[in-house]
Image (cartoon, rainbow, N blue to C red; front, side):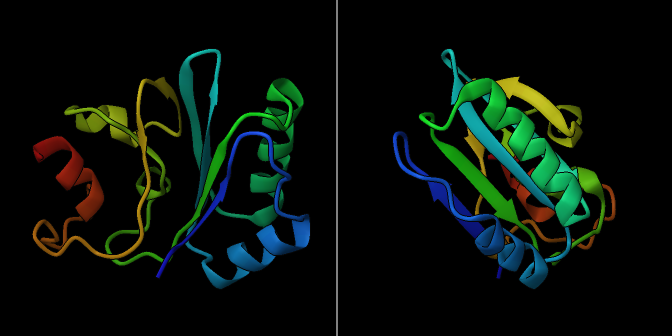
Length: 134
């Protein structure tokens, strides 16, 4: 099952070694989202820990560590594309969900499989289908 690490507002970040362990145990892509100036920003599609950590560090340099962050480390259950990593913006448009960088009002990440929508598509994941349809 995927791992989600949540860093609430005003708390310390998980250490680099903890995040690396999350990535190594869930190696099918990673991403993160954070709130800043009344928007949710997300970045995803990282296939190496170094790429993920560099992007996270750059975002933290911009926001500081006071804002909340959600970090998602994926084990692929359907499809293996960068666009299928979490988090996703809340949108009915599949193209919005495929973006690796976005800003939105609400971001989504979860663990597990949504088998009500899992049809084996290589174009979208069960989560992407769920978000656009429900």
